[in-house]
Amino acid sequence: MSDCISSVEVLYNVLMVYIRGVLILGIVLVILPFAGM
Image (cartoon, rainbow, N blue to C red; front, side, top):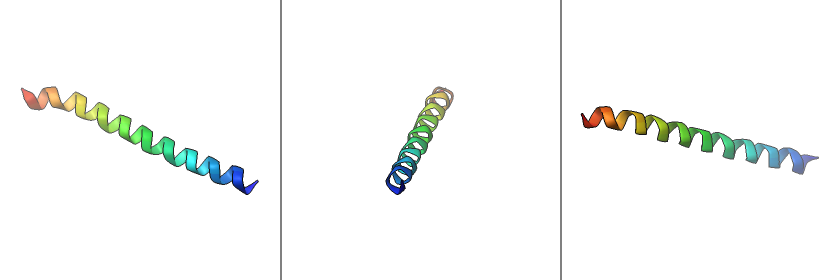
């Protein structure tokens, strides 16, 4: 049971990092064209 909980926590942390990375990448791609002007 504890192994299942720990694996879920690790998966959740990885998912949060992935989502944060995608958001940052998206914001950068949106801002760069405006900054280039």
